[in-house]
Image (cartoon, rainbow, N blue to C red):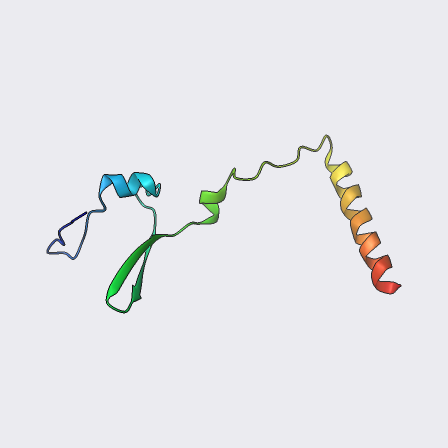
Length: 81
């Protein structure tokens, strides 16, 4: 796909490519130079990854704390053995 560089050095990324790579307004992209080629890569941030992994629901935060304490206890016991 062809695009024209404006007098300000700007290039429009074609809609098909933006859709394919989920590039939205204000997203960041990285330009990578390899020899005579230039690659444009979308930059993923932590914000983009929100919701990718479903959190385990805990009925109570004290239950989560007890699980974490037990895990630390097992690790310390193993390191001391």
